[in-house]
Length: 229
Image (tube, rainbow, N blue to C red):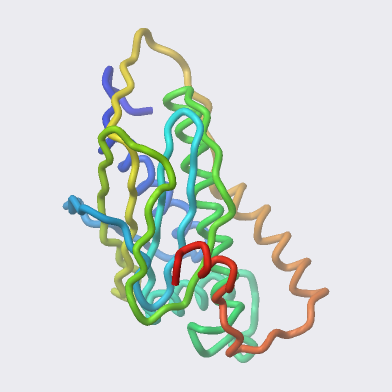
């Protein structure tokens, strides 16, 4: 638990960074690291080659975006699938494959689930997440929270894979502080157990589904309409 009496926006960002590292490291069985230097930004964007975003609300509202390069996406995809016993010959070869997008969307779902669980455990604040949205894009797409924030803040953190490929996580939320009135016990969440449960579900789904077209677009037209593209 964070040993602080006042929890700021940047402390919440640290919880999120820890969730990204823990879930991706556990899922891929590789080492994921993040930069100790955090960048303040004025807007949040989906960026090439694959952008994934999810909204959360409840005790406070926010937006999480992870932007993967083609190289980092494929490295994480291959490591994740091979850790589950998938033969290398059956893996997708392009980052535009639907399989890659589905896998990254599922990992994003696990990351935010771990994050919301930690927020509930450490701050005793309940927040809910939407279903992650994935886009393969070749240009930046501005994404913002559809609500009025009094003092919006945005942060950008660089992550690196075991193969030294870089991807970026962006967080936008209202500036906030949580003040601890008295000590309390927190309930720890085991991310390895969560990942294992998801892996079992994915294996069951893959065994019963037909192969998909590797070049099928991940872009949902309704989603693009909502974004005004």
